[in-house]
Amino acid sequence: MNSSWRQALTERGARIDAERVTGFTGSQREVELDATATVVTALFSHGLIMASGEDAQAFLQGQLSNDITRVSRSRAQLAAYCTPKGRVLATLLLWNTEEGYALELPCELCDPIRKRLQMYVLRSRVQLTDASERSAVIGVIGPDAALAVRSELGFALSSDYDVARSDGVTAIALPGGRVEVIADVVRGAETWDRLARRCVALGEEVWDAHAIASGIPAITAATQDQFTPHMLNLDLVGGISFDKGCYTGQEIVARTQYLGQVKRRLARFATTARAAPGAPIYAGTAPAGVVVNSARSLAGEFELLAVTQTQAAGSRTALQLGSEGPALRPLVLPYPVPDLSSRHGGESG
Image (cartoon, rainbow, N blue to C red; front, side):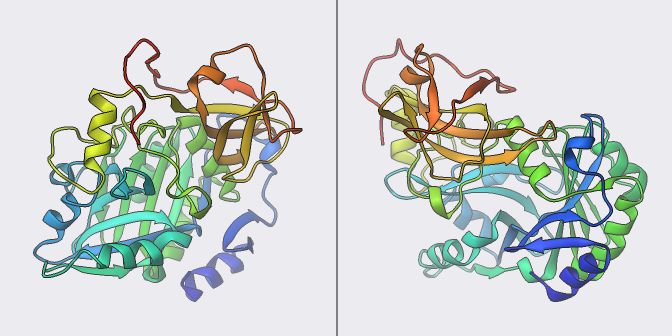
């Protein structure tokens, strides 16, 4: 994280621990806010890889799960980067920049993913650089998030994945009443100040909680190479193109879509304890799933996304964290998850 951006936020009361903003001195506690609050936070845990050069689009098209040709100056998209066996190494948010394409993912994955992508550049005219140090990533959350961004920054965003940008600042509308604002570090503090005068400044866990409520997963180091895109519901949230042609892992993803039975799916739960990504979920004494993301919600309880066996999720046997942990209470996702139990064939991948 750029030291000047860190210093600017520290001067504004940010508490930073383990490269995450945990809160702001003087702000209301999360449990004192209701669902109508508009919140701003600094997303220190988010990093950026920049893909530039004449062949950047063609290169990414052959590596990622979505159709990169549909990314434009006004539209962003989700995508997955998979192994040849169709296991997800990273979930990405992509958008156009003046340099090429920005790929957003957790900071902890930026360097290893960039290096892995670099192995496949070969003779392609593509440059892959870590742009995290020169970017300030800000999250605005709440039912009036888009209104706050329009009022303070002048960006009009009407639907999810709309993109607007001007003078070194980009805004992207995301599911769940979220808007991400990416500024170069020169404009980071100024952009923050504009938004903070209209919003309550809180730690970035509130952003994570809203992403969980939206059913949008984020792969971290603890959960790499464990799930296919279908297990993460990426087919349900626009993270996969099934007509774009070949890309790394495409054969497995296509086989799952057209021939396989998806026996594990992403589900949302509430519980009384924090769960780390990668933590096991049990149905009685039997393993039944893995935690993908977890965060404390504004209501004060913990919510999580977990890939669970569809048979276990639909049974009467209660799910729990670990073999002796607290029970999990199922929560709805904001999109329908199909019942594929009647389909024939085994699960691919």
